[in-house]
Amino acid sequence: MPYQWTETAPDDSGAVLQRLILWPHRSLPRQGFVWFIGATATFMALPILAVLGTQVLWGLLPFVVLVMLGVWWAIQHTYRSGQTREELLLDHDKLQVRRSDPGRATREWRTNSYWVRACLRQGPVQNYLTLTDGQREIELGAFLTPEERVSLCDELGRALGRARE
Image (tube, rainbow, N blue to C red; front, side, top):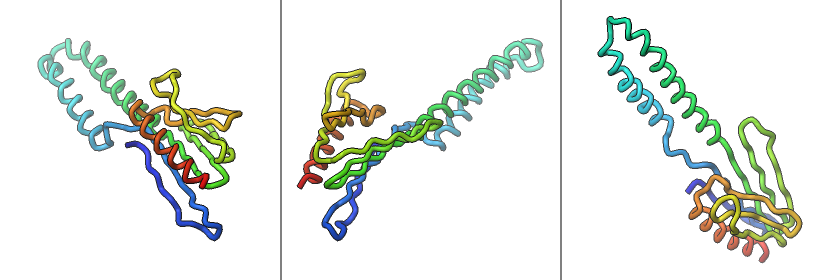
């Protein structure tokens, strides 16, 4: 799953800090990107080989180059959007959520962890996961699949319960 829980050892007061980091899943790793671009370039070269030495080559070549540049740009754009991170820090008296998006300022939300509730509801997406303290509501894990949001909601409920003890 594209999230990870970590816990720190109890400090002098006995408080345990729970940390959750979420990130968007990317199915094409960087090495796969190299192979995909290479295979695409190879397949795009096949029609070029058929017209090599003719004037048709100059009519086809700009379109082949545009397709290759478009594919390159699109995949690079998804890698940039994959740099989004959400970090949740939770202990017995506070909860902090920090969201970092490429090209935007980091957004933070802090509240008392005792009042926070994780809930799923119908919203812009299926199983819309939110955290609320009764006054403000924030979305968490918008880039996760509906099944991952359900699983995360259960885990958040248990983590919040442990923090209240």
